[in-house]
Amino acid sequence: MSAQSPFLPQGVPPPPNTGNEQLGQGAPSPFIHEEKPAFPIHRRDDRASSFLSFLDPILGPFGKAFDSMAERRKALDLPFPGTTDSLQREVKGTLLTNFFFDGAKADLTKALSINPIFQVSHGFSLGGTTKDGMAPSTYNLNVVYGSDNWFLQGGCDDGGSVQMRANSEWAPGHTSKIQGNLTKGTQGSFVQLEHDYKGSDHAANFKTLNPSPTDGSGIYIVNYIQSLTKNFALGLETIYQRQTADTQDAMVGYMGKWTSTDKNSIGTFQFQSQGVLNATYWQRLTDKVDVAGDFNVIAAAGKREATSTLGAKYDFRMSTFRAQIDSNFKVSSQLETRLAPTFAFTVGGEIDHWSSLARFGVGISIESPSSDIPFDPTGPQPTPPNVPM
Image 1 (cartoon, rainbow, N blue to C red):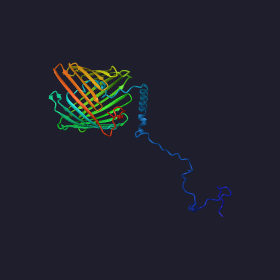
Image 2: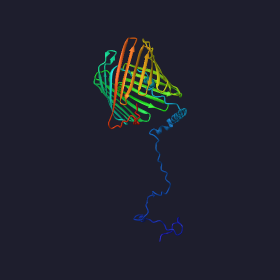
Image 3: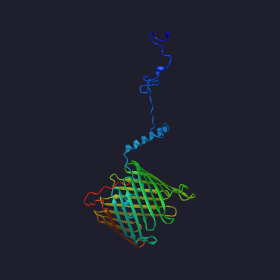
Image 4: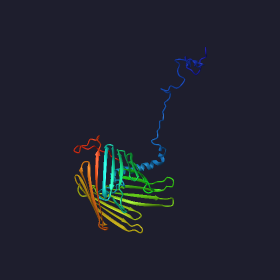
């Protein structure tokens, strides 16, 4: 009989001398019970809020200041000023400059789908004129695809030129664009990369033309426009041009846009540091009548020139009439009328009183929907997608 241990109470047997009784079936586990630990365990499961969260002690104050500024800007409820490319959209849509043509022109369009947009068009032109004389007859094929997130366009002409354009809205407010043209000769071929960012009260754009990653040549344009009040926005544009390694140039420009409270009047200005000023004004007189004015001044070294243009647009139920006159005594007008839901006829003329020259143009446009598309002129039309442009 073993002696009683002085460290144990009376009647308590001493522990066994071996561990054999701790082994075998039904024996207690020699390890800590994982489901019911002997002491409390506080497991840490920390996760980073972002990849650069370890820089929060350094960047945190800047982030808080930025968030505070964003909240104050949001409280101002400033409107979106539009992109810099659409700064003069209303003026360009009213004046005849971007719509006039001479000679004969015909466009045949086959719509295969409305949503998404998918159409094929054939274009013919004959008898046009240029500064060097008569322009040759041309034919071009154009294919367009458009959805809510994509816009794809490709075309070619009888001269061997190939054009392409692609826009993608890959995130809210972010649209990336690429545009290219390939010709037979050394002149005329180009590639252009562009990205648009649209905020709540501002817009930014980056554009590069013929960039070369080897020597850094090309044209690079960065612009930004910000709404300062509910009616006025101010912007800045920077242009860097590097044709060769030894030839480079940089320019800075400023732009502004004023919009009336009722959105019926818009005035813009653009100024380049080399001495170029452009100012426009657009006014909506009625729901069907718009007027616009364009004023240009060039005060560069060795050149002094100023021109102004006034124009008006009348929208009727089935036709649109544009008239224009400029400071060079050039008067022009154009009438586009839709004789049927799928047939449009255009006629226009221009008289240059200063040089005693006249031009005349006539064109037709035929749209043929696919047999799979239900077409009812009296019924509601299908809703096209919001194509990123």
